[in-house]
Length: 435
Image (cartoon, rainbow, N blue to C red; front, side):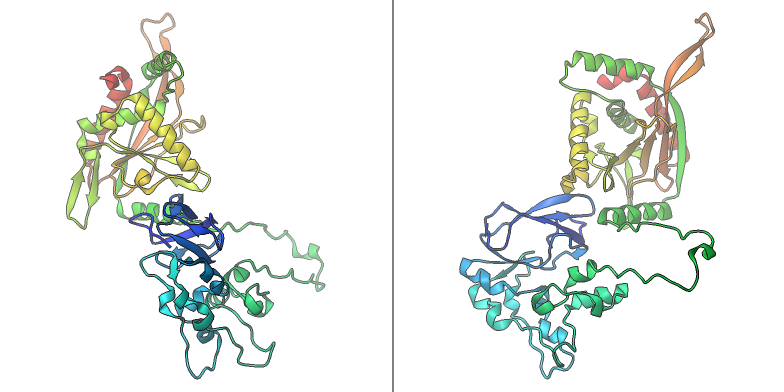
């Protein structure tokens, strides 16, 4: 399993792009790897042939460094790995399967290349002569053949191996057999009529926890536990902003389509310039508060697998058209699960916008550690305001509620208030964002 980002510790196997026997060339996609943030193609960097797929599509939580396949330099060696398995690499299936063995046989360690996520083997390392075969210690039919990982999963889930049908060589039970096992429906009870039980039993669906969902849960739980956060909220007029947006989009003749969110991202950079403490990170191990000079805005994007925050970098140096194009491109890649690590790692401040939902007037968001500030944006609402120049004495204004969450370790309350004030001024005077 390759490490596709500095923080990656495990991954899931997506679709294999090559089949056993296919020729491999440097730079060609070999297999899709699902990380906690995205699904990416792993490009192979060697020449050879794919001899064996050790971990099939759908394999989950594979530690970085664990072999997922075998390649050979000579096409003639492919057939020798037909019955090769992960157990052969990790110490030999015979030692794992036989309860009473007088000696333990291990696979040739040359079959695995430690610095490559796909195991390397040459003709001299052929498992035809070195890899052990699973054996039975009792009469035929008395012993179940199962891989070590299959036994472990069965033990953890309480699955009786005798009820699992093996799909491996000689009926051997392998990992996917246990994972796909479904118990037989229990026999109908005749001891009492169903009506006597009173209310019907609850029905439910168990949804597997994905790698991304685990990461979201871990990071946000960590944030709530370690960050003494506080909230500052302000109702901001966006009537001028709406007019500016409409004018820019009309003059753009289809070359760009700027959104309210794009303008708010630029306004964040202006507020950060006025109150740089909000553009900081708490780095306890280093013993510092790191105050960033560049403004890299993490933009929360909802995807089918969970929330992810691609980063628009150096917002302070970009115009609205460039910001808009980048947000759209990153959002599409996020929803397609194609973000590269450098497109979602980092970020100095975050924006989360639920304004597209007219039911959300305002909300509070959880800080994205190690950042110290996150801005939550509600929907645009039309409100009546006092207007002495109007015949009726009132006028209508488009407003939004902006709610910022700050880490009090980094941003004191008075500083947070100054930041929201600077943001309000930038949003209500949007022409200054063009300077």
